[in-house]
Length: 195
Image 1 (cartoon, rainbow, N blue to C red):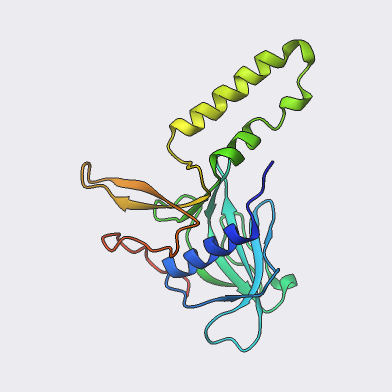
Image 2: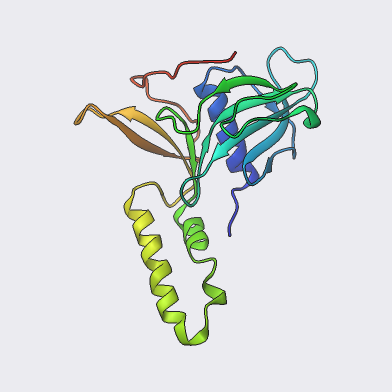
C-alpha cells in the first residue's frame, strides 16, 4: 500500500483550515502522522504562543479517500480524544465539527497508482493456480473505482460545488500540486460550528 506523503497531508490540512475559515496555521516540521482513523500533527494557530496538538478524525468509506469528521486541538497529545463521529471529548476542543457524511466535506483522494496498490495488495498471496482469477477480480475492483470519477493521475483534493446543469452538488477534484489551492467563489460556504 502506498501511503499519502507528508507534503500531501500538509497541503490537505492547510486546505481544510482555509475551507473552514480557521485562520493561518504553522505546522511543525516533521510532526504530521497518518494513523488508521486520524491525521495528527503539531502547530501554531494565529493567536497561539506555542505549538498545540491537533487531530483530524476521518472516515474512509472507499479505497484511498479520506473525509474529515472534525478538526480538534488540545495542549498535549494525551488530551486529544473524541467520539466515533469526531466530536471532542474531555480536554479536547473542537475547531470545527464536519460530521461523518457531509456533502460539504473537503476530501483527500489517492492517485490512480496508489489506488491500484490498494486494490491489488492481496494479489501476491494468491495461490499460483488461481492467480489469473484473483488478478481479474482485483482489476475489476480497480476499474470500478476509476469509473466513479474519484481519482486523478495525481493526489487530489475534492470538494463539492453546485452543478449548473443539474442544480445538485458535484464533486470537483483539484490536484494537490496546484500552485495554490482555492475554492470556487460560487461555492456555498459550509456552516461553521463548535468554535
